[in-house]
Length: 111
Picture 1: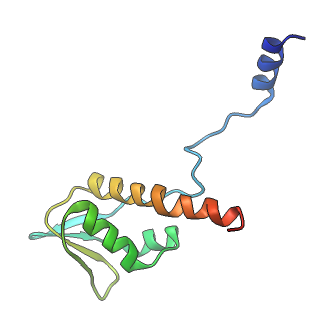
Picture 2: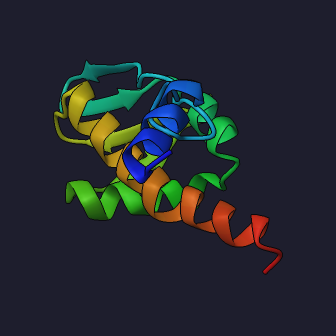
């Protein structure tokens, strides 16, 4: 059996890998406008999914989106300005790729 045959056989016997390879799926940001403020309703759910501190993600989003923000008494993130849900999701996904998955890889390696 030559190399090409072995490769074809291996590909046939290997199950398809579904998804993006991420260990978790992020909840879609529930974002709504309150005047000139964007309220990230399920911010706490996102934090729980990522297993991260609220201030760390908040500061990251402030820097990425060029705005100020605070967390209200209900755990919602309030971003100054109008932002689309797609922009918020994009920033959270970048955070997850840069901080969470990289840290998880280091943790899994025992470092």
